[in-house]
Length: 189
Image 1 (cartoon, rainbow, N blue to C red):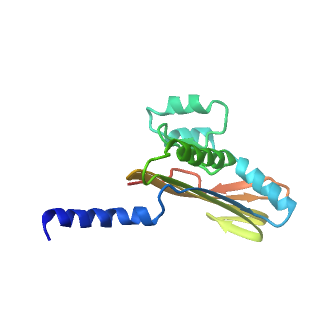
Image 2 (image 1 turned 30 degrees about the vertical axis):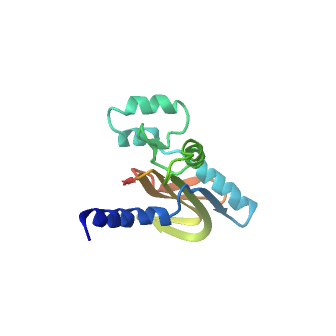
Image 3 (image 1 turned 90 degrees about the vertical axis):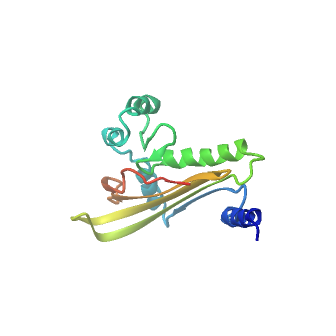
């Protein structure tokens, strides 16, 4: 096999996973699992919980902090990073942002080979007589578990992250604790 043929074979192997994963695929999957209207209301409350603004700004790079605070204004600051919004917390605003991003990428990447973006967001709620997390005991509570996976690929470059958040609430909707907020690992290819 000559050198040119080996390169072609290697290039095909390199591109095969991209092709088999689906070219130009844009998907938004949002799923909220609940059984009663009360549970649905608790999910809405959990999705509205904003992290402390100072915690989010502390996660940003020093040169991004002023721009980030100005961009968010008085709105919930759920992200950090000025070039690409990395979620510090999963909120309803984050779900809307990444849904819009998938739709925008689909619109702007028409005709580009190997362009794709996908958002998967799943929420589940569960009642617990007792729940222990991080050394704290909670009694008679609902646990809202949110999971978000997002990935995008434009031509041969891409990025992906996974994020989870747990919100502990009373049956009346008082937020007792939030777990999972913080920096997010972004995998770039």
